[in-house]
Amino acid sequence: MKAVVARNLVKKFGNFRALNGVSFEVESGQIFAFLGPNGAGKTTTVKILTGIIQKDEGEIEILGYRNPYPKNEIEIKKRIGFVPDEPEVYPYFTGSEFLSFVLDIFGNPPRMRSKMRNLLSAFNIDYLGKLIKDMSHGMKQKIILVSVLMREPDIVFLDEPIVGLDVKSAKVLKTYLRSLADSGKTIFMNTHVLEIAEKIADEIGIINDGKIIAQGSLEDLKKRVGTDSSLEDLFLKLTGEEEEIKALVEELKE
Image 1 (cartoon, rainbow, N blue to C red):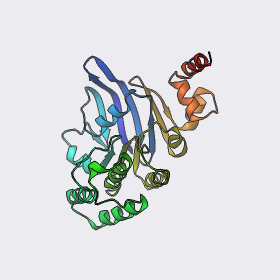
Image 2: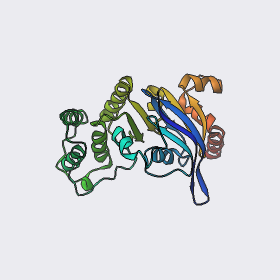
Image 3: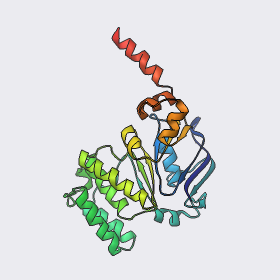
Image 4: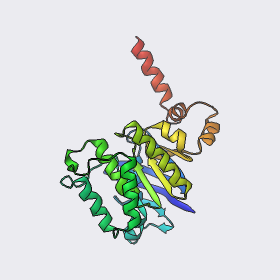
């Protein structure tokens, strides 16, 4: 089953086209790493897929629902979770109050409470009494991760999930995401950390200037470019930045 489908997505901000005919498919049970330079359209794509902003043209399907927003918004949002790159939540809630708020929205089921306790322990969160406004970026990131992962959604959307996490928490997250995918959940992850895409992604999509320029497994992409080099080198070749980097380095030598 296709968990996520995008067909010819277009999104404009004034005269600027952030997305210009973006199309891709993500199978259920996959970890899909969505890569691209800054400003390429990654976050805009995820915000459309999660119903935060509306597309201007094209179609999306989420868990079989075609163009679900706003008609099927409640059903979809019960089944997906989103961890943004900027963890901005209610600043005057404590961590405990925020998690209790999320639990109450979903009926406070025992399994969710149990999953929450396990996640709090795994991410070494011992600051639930602290106001969210007084937490560091990494501390807030872990609270939001718990609030999403404890729900066990069918699709987890993550925008730069590793940024701000300590080494242990990053390893816990990567390992847990792999186990979720192996159990049939779908992970859609925007990331600049190419190592995480290289190590755990089943499928990689690369976007540049609002267009998909490549999609496939790491091995597929290597065959396409005709190289056995790292994902970093592959990424730079596909986005056309390899020659630019060489020129910049030569300038620095002068």
